[in-house]
Figure 1 (cartoon, rainbow, N blue to C red):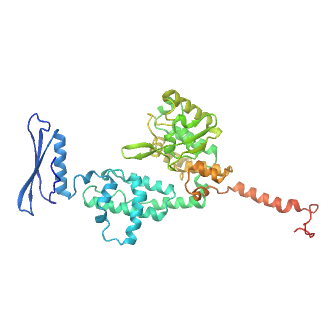
Figure 2: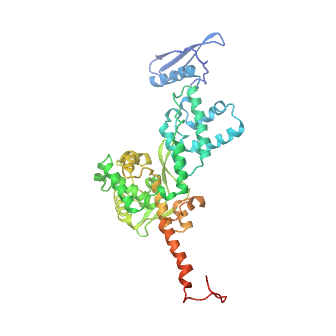
Figure 3: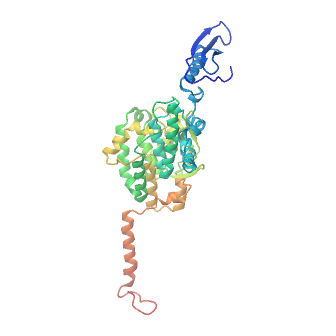
Length: 415
């Protein structure tokens, strides 16, 4: 291969491909252009094993001349491209602004969508990433800085001719963040009321499922089982996708959570859970028959390492797949749960456990929270518990100190 070729911006490049016979690399590609600085005609050539490879090489040179971008840069991931144009994209910013932008880029953008090619980015990808940040409790200023940073990188990609519109300039995320703040103030507002409400949702999603074979071929209510398991174990859908038959003990009814399915370079991959350590999750009696059936079916079909929950064709499941396959948005709106996101099923389970009196340190272990403050958000009291507290206070203050009750130990009458 020839050394790196520098072609001036804006020059016209003529190309041709010649077949030179039965050689290991029989296709010779050649490009010619006029160099305005050197005032002479220049050329570059190289040999390739296939005509397609030769054409791709020439197309890269033509693109470099037309947009001033190295052809290798056109195929960069967002992380690679952003780092290569960082100084150019953020020119003119003061350090007090650039520093938080850089933090948002490193902490949020790169881990979420940095592995995706620049030209494959979309508004939908950005929207999902932002909603994931919000669901994880990322601060509003951090989200704002991350979007500002990636927005500037997108603007530079437009100037370089890699994309025609900026997929990182999204709107509406502030309202989603306002809902998340409301969740902190009244977390119960975004949780299903009880198990009956969960079953109602589950049945409606199954009825709306586009792939009816999912139930008939595998012998269970596919998406309904996924939804019920997510809520009753307070887990994320990536963790549900990662569970294997060996992970669930059908004697103790404990799920040892050791992996999750997450987007990665090259597609979906199984990795360690978000907490980076295994955790143990109880399985409530209401879903045990379903879980037993699923585990035994997985064992029979694929052994101990078979997936307990998979898509209609046996693949990994994601929140986007669940949404599209069940017509989630329309179903939850029809049921009056228009606020409900897939992640709120996890919130529902943690809310139920908190109401059931699960101690804080145990709830933190089940949830896999690194920060105790995150777990404390779920220790909000229900109205029934508040009323019970009032009755308990009345009993304490009035009951023991009736007219025939004990006297004040100091000799006086008790108020």
